[in-house]
Amino acid sequence: MISNAYEAVMNPGVNPLRHLPKIVRFQLMTSLALMWSIVFSVWTGMVIMAGPSMIVHTILLIGVYFTADVFHNANKRKLVDHRAKFVDPVDGCSKYDDMWGGC
Image (cartoon, rainbow, N blue to C red; front, side, top):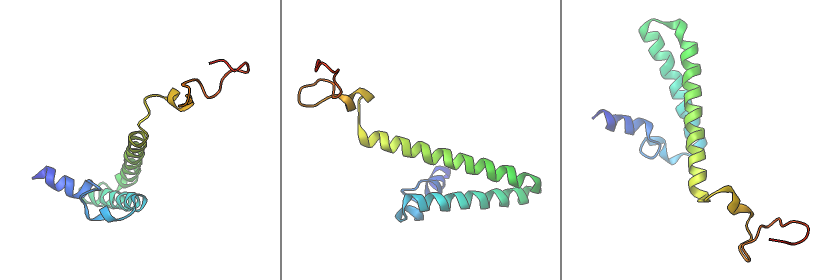
């Protein structure tokens, strides 16, 4: 039950924000995280902790967003390693051969 509630709020493919562009979803989730930071700080009576809590939540969400973006881009490219970008598909030699034309 708790995992279903977590998925309904935190999973961008399930929550009601799923139809929005990714950057708008990120901005709204960041705003919601800041709001909940304030709510929990006031609720616990530690208003002095509201600022650090907002900063930590923002840093956490930015880290999660950029990690997901890096994983998404890496999955989309499907390169074995960085050397694959520099190999000529016609002859298998390096695209940037030495000045004598060797492989």
